[in-house]
Image (cartoon, rainbow, N blue to C red; front, side, top):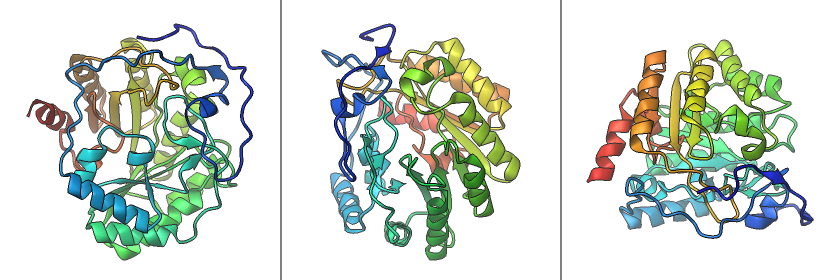
Length: 337
């Protein structure tokens, strides 16, 4: 299904970046070090990848509430296939610090560009929205903000404080960027005011990092997770990865070994789905049996919980995974009903 077995270096002339202007599609891809050959025809999805739209009225209500509070969700910005299910169930993964990312990963649908200044009212607005939605568990993620001295760590802390003050019984999971070059200050700030779950996605195997995560580093992500665990051994650490983007099964098992060796507690594994023809192509659609093997192996080597399935995403049923529920069984049941 891949258009090219080996990536080639990119050479198009990039467009000028202006503050607050979103670059998507070909404009975003023009600025990465590895060229993505546009897909001619999107591959047909297999029967085991299904997206069911439930409760459209609730989806519209949550979108309206988010716009009123000037908030963003990764569900919308990254074109998550589970948006309707999660919104329809009254949950969302909030994306703070704007909707423009300073990185330009070719698997991700979030816009690239020069971000606006941080919104000082965002922590308050987030806290009010969580209260209005009646949430008991909330996931907060962000774009990469390499333009900020602390990578946005203090803003994460401000959001944690504001949400907990307004919602004292809330459980909070944060899905953080890699804070590359800012790890020390970021970990100090967050460990002083920690969430209930510290999540960072490694995304893919080490061999594919140059092509899939330009600007990031495999070992750095592992170290970030381990160092937070060393700072706060009482807090669960979590990591997500995607498959079907060119890795082998053996490489995924090796990645799971690396995560466990770096003291990660919870893992999510899902199928990569190409957002558009200009994004990195799907190499293959991974069969559910292979996802089951990953889950079994993860349990064998000692993870507290492994959510592994075609439609699993990093924050999919995050509250249930934190509670120890078998999300894999739930996913299979939902797809067969």
